[in-house]
Structures are given as structure tokens and as C-alpha cells.
Length: 374
Image 1 (cartoon, rainbow, N blue to C red):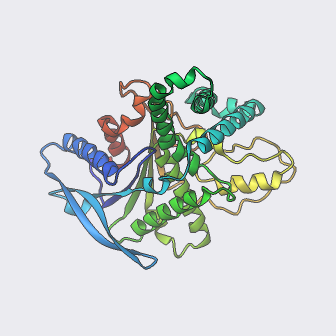
Image 2 (tube, rainbow, N blue to C red):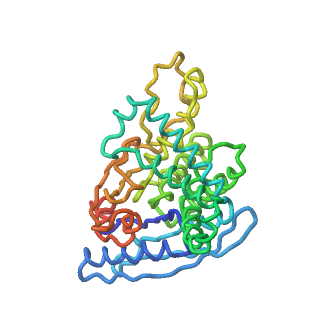
Image 3 (cartoon, helix red, strand yellow):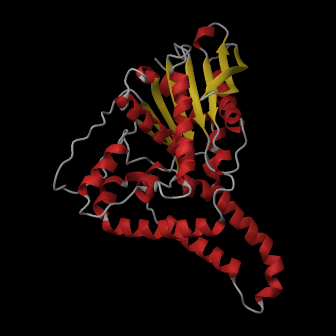
């Protein structure tokens, strides 16, 4: 179980207070353990490299890790990290987050009721989408207690405030990332953060495919990082359509790994909804978000608009998705054309399972088998 050519992994972390290189550390450690177990007697070393990078006139040093097998040094596996957490710091406050979640949960409930045919066709193994509504109610309650003004409440406020502050900060740290990144309205003050995030991710991919060292590039994303990974590949497909010569090495991208992925939920809850009469705009949006996507528009359009975006990457990129029933964020991905949806059982508690993938060695075994077995 080892690649026949040099491979690059770009790993993208998820929501929360992430630190640089934490993602790289978790992913590489467990990948190495898996390879050592499945290549008995082999000498596989972990090597740290740095290289200069230049982008738009800015220079910096990029760190990456290699797993090198002594008898196959030219077939190393290199791991890079796309770190984006710092872009979200201080971008949203609690009240903005409450307003966003309440609006989103109400809109999702309405869309759910109006599109029962879509739900029936694609919901599959992903389960019910009830909990976003409940999360909206929780946020309303927290917002209410933060501003509650009744005489006897002043007596207990000093005792309750630390718990409320901690709870609200936790929501901001985690849900805030989702609120900011899923903003598709160009008029929003948060849109520039999403745009910057995606632009930089596309640049990372471009740097890897243009690197002569690599014959194969695989993108791996956890949680919201899987959404960024998907959106990045969707953008790369756009660029490949428009500038085939400049992006001629895009065919090196042959893998997408998602784990703890909310992609079905973002497709269902956060996609831009259009009124029935706006059939041209609706089709434009469907064309734009079409990478490995299934048809979410079940309406018989009055006029069919030709799609100018060819699926140049769809067939060459093999997609494997890992999900656990005790992880409420993840799920079997039904809204996308995924090559292998793997349900795992990490034996973690409900909710805690969302971050347990990093240490789950069986996931790395399946990943290696999927991409490296002959």
C-alpha cells in the first residue's frame, strides 16, 4: 500500500480555534502509523521540509512534511496545510450570529416544506434535518437571557454571566466560521472573508499542480474544511474551462477526501434560493455550483439554458467521504456524486465524534487502500 508516484496532499482544517500545523500534525501522525502497520519491515521516515514561495510579490517560507520509504524515495507522500482560521478572527459578534442562525433556520424550514420531492429523492441516509431549527431556538434563548432585565435576575446575574459568556463565545468561535463562510451575498460585510479564503485556497492548489515534483494531488478537508475543499475544486474547474493552457496541470488532481462533512447540509440550507419565476437566474446558479453535483432543481423549467461549464474534473477526481452517525455535522453525501461513502463507527460520544476522525486509524487505512492500492 504505497503510491507509485510522488503524491501531494493538501489538508484543510475545520471550524473552531485552530492553530497553525495542528492539522498537519494530526493527519501526518496517523497516516504514518497506518503506513507502518501496512508496510511491515519498511523504513518510513517523517521529514520536515521548507521551501520559498512567492505570490503577488510577497515572499514567505512554506512548511511541509514528507513520508519517505527508504526503498522508494522518489514516491514520497508530501503533506501541506491550508490554514484559514486566522481570517475569521473578530469578524462576527454574537448578536449577528443569532440573527443569521434564526434567519437560516426559518428559511431552511420553509424550503424543507416547499421541496418535499427534493428531500424524498436526495435525503437518503443523511437523516432528518430537524436540528438546525432547534439550534435556532437555542440561540434565541441565549440571546434572550443575555439581555434579560427583571428585578430578581440581577441577584443571580453574576453567577450566570460566566456560563452564558462561555456558551456564547463557544457559539461564536464555531458557528461564526460557518456563518461567515456560507455568506454568498456580495453585499454582506463578510463576503470579502469568504472570497479571500477561496482565492487563497485556489492559489495553494495551483502551486501544487504546477510543481514538477508531483504527478498526483489529493485534497482532504474536515468539517467546514470539506466545504472549502469542494468550493475550491469547483473554482478550479471554472478556471480550467476558461484558461485551459494556464490550468493544463489541473488533471494532476485525482482525489478528494471529506470527513465530518456538512456538504449536504450546506447544499440544502445555505444554497441561494430563487423565486419560481426566476428560472434563468436559478439555472445560472446551478451551473456555477456544478462540480460533481446532482440536479437539485426538480422543476420543469420554462426555458432550458445551456450550461457553459464543462465537467472537466468530475471524472478524474475520485471522492471518498467518511461519516459517523454520532457526528451530527456529517452524513452520507447524497447531493453529490461521491465514489465511496463510508460510514464509520469511531465509538465516540454523540457530538464528540465530530473531532474524532483525526485519530481514527481505520479511516487512513481506507484512504490508502482507495488511492494507493493497485
